[in-house]
Amino acid sequence: MNFLCDTNIISEVMKKLPNQAVKNWMKDREFLYLSVITVEEIYCGLAHKDARRQKEWFEKFVEFRCEVLPITTAVASRCGVMRGEFRRQGIIRTQADVLIASTAYEYGLTIVTRNTDDFKGCNIQMLNPFIESTPNV
Image 1 (cartoon, one colour):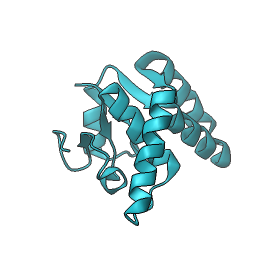
Image 2 (cartoon, one colour):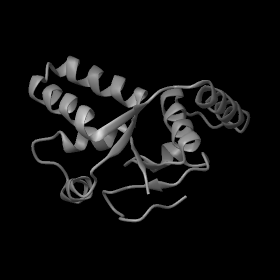
Image 3 (cartoon, helix red, strand yellow):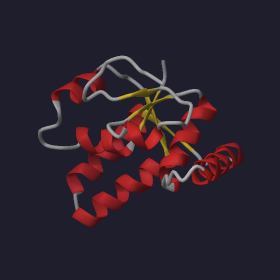
């Protein structure tokens, strides 16, 4: 199974004292995928905090353990359709979250996140390593 990590998972493992369940899940993974959206969100947070140690860790993590996936035309199209359908139903989702969900869908990846509500109805498998060890839809 291949995993696309949401921003909150990467942020968690960068903490001085990360959640033990997330830390354990992460150490068992040799390779992960990230959306380019997650990369932007992490760099934004690190710049805001002037967190040089975490920035160095993140850059090495991406270089040696990740593949960063782009926003392709297929991802953008899926995102637009999903956001439009959600909106028609009165459901508001952020563009960033739906781009990440669309990336997971297009590449057949399981999204790893603490915020599973942000991805409900996106027709993707999810895993919340804070509370579970196997994915669900």
